[in-house]
Length: 251
Image 1: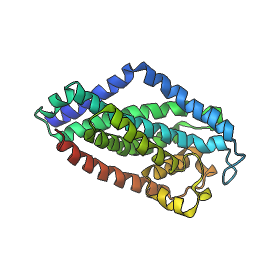
Image 2 (image 1 turned 45 degrees about the horizontal axis):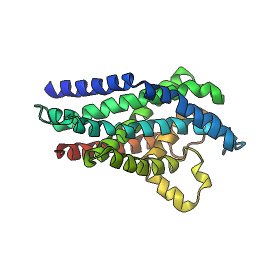
Image 3 (image 1 turned 180 degrees about the horizontal axis):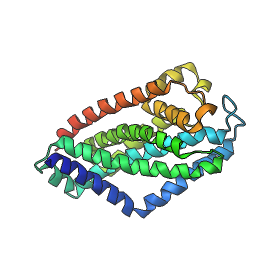
């Protein structure tokens, strides 16, 4: 019971902290709109693959981008907590460190999903008729993406000593994951060697699954939906286990 209470407390703390940071809430609305309107209109390819408008094509990719960037950003909370002594107080509490990791991971994932949900409000901007069913079916995929990516951020942050160092590593990890996922362009258009690199990118499967849910029959998925879900689940389990091990050795 103490571990469950610790997980809930840490989850609630992360969610409350997110709600109190007004600048992050504002950026949740502004940043996706800039990508969809400015970037999407700037390139404005006439169609992608089966005749999908480019802005519609990148819409699920922008959802994936928001989830990725927000999830990785959550790792900063570990460094902040370490600098202000809060992390030390948590680690000496009579609860397992795995519970501490899971609590922070669930809190960060909740924040990322909330921020990703804001992007769906712009579906009308690009002409996507998204119904409630499509949105609800997208939520499990969004959670699977954030579970893994928040865990990656927490692992990296637990190994870093400064915000500056984490900022550099975060950018170094974020950009390849984003650009190799096919969020902005179809992987069928890239060289063969780049396709093989994209296969090892877990976000590739998340973006493909989101396109299947959001664009429905207008999009021909790269992989079957069950395969995308299986890969994301396997990645999450592996990275959470690794994260729990690394976090358990944190001093």
